[in-house]
Image 1 (spheres, rainbow, N blue to C red):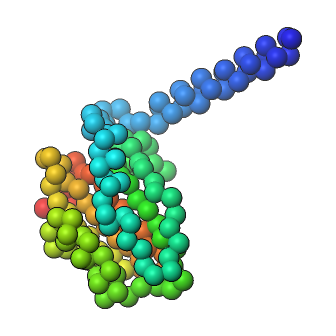
Image 2: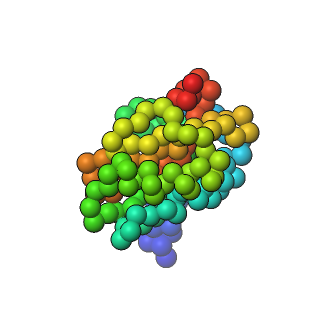
Image 3: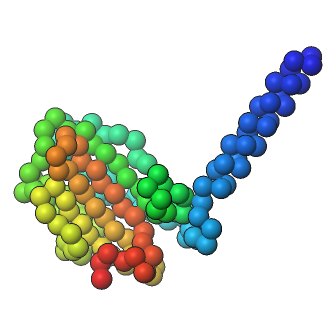
Length: 158
């Protein structure tokens, strides 16, 4: 019985330590959007996340909350992303032909910001916040589709 009590107490201490660690990985003064859970649901519903090149294998949709410390020291953003593993690399013309119609139908304006072979970038304002859609495929046999929110001071679309 004493062994069970000690084991339960140890598990409780480990859980408390883990929760304390989770709470401390957020930056002080960084405030995630107050409705972040519903924003993540809304971002995850973007149709472009479901567009896959022929024969691609979809990985799990990832959701990220804002204000967490990243390994590089930056603060995380409110974001969703999905990766598709490909059997071959895409050309820019193939990526534009595949993604551009769905992007435009979803109300994203023409490509803005950084662009080039292996990279597409779009921005739009929704409810006073900038949404950034980025699609990358260069030098790897995968496509990554990322949609994130930015703060006004960090707006890459200006």
